[in-house]
Length: 341
Ligand SMILES: C[S@@+](CC[C@H](N)C(=O)[O-])C[C@H]1O[C@@H](n2cnc3c(N)ncnc32)[C@H](O)[C@@H]1O
Image (cartoon, rainbow, N blue to C red):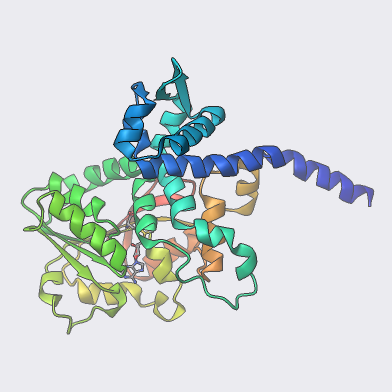
């Protein structure tokens, strides 16, 4: 008995939040997400702006805006000057930089996370409880600069004319690759209508409609009889960011996944794959890193097992791919694999 009590005390002291802090953190995450939604971060980053001007630019009702800004001020995200002027604090600037995590947790998975207690029996599915467009935007913004710098270094040394990004989300990574390599062509594939709509808008906005093609499809349904197979058969570099775990989770295709991909992309020379993989529980308890606990929790509720790094390494080797590089970046247990065919 005594021992149990001791363990409880040790466990409790490891937690970084007591109920009071937890309550305010929960509120804070929602306030930060609301700042993003109304466009406040861009308005008050590095400059003081009057509340009247903020209300005009965001279309906010003044009383509600005052309440939101007051909560943000108390929580430390904004500073107030001469009663009516607001500017992001240093903490607010950091929240702005890391907004991808809040778009992901509050915007994309907020409904699911609030309903864990309704879903625990497994009788109810989770479909409709995540916002696909926000999953795409949130994942895109999480440490996208780090990934894009790595991609540049790698792609600069690979000769290619055509690149395909499957699970392309909002298309931003494909767009950035095509902007860096003006004479190349790109294809984005995504199963989600929301993601494809966003990607279409973004491609148009960047004037890339001539060189970029989007396919609204499940990558697993693409085969030799697909109407765009000729286009796909020219692809030399295939990328996939933060989505391979979804495919890996389907036992029937796990072993044959790369054979299927090679059939779709017969000229592929490189696969560039990034993903967040399973993090040891002991590490998560010790460090409580941003993202991983939530990432593994929502995927468990969607019946998706997050693979370990050992499982990925083995699967790539079994598929006859050479792991030229495996570079950690961004959130804990997140890697960019450079796989040579
Ligand atoms: C976590 S998001 C990542 C989006 C993007 N790659 C990024 O890093 O910003 C995963 C994306 O993969 C897409 N996806 C999942 N399974 C797919 C499949 N079987 N075929 C095509 N797209 C798929 C989802 O719709 C979603 O847009």
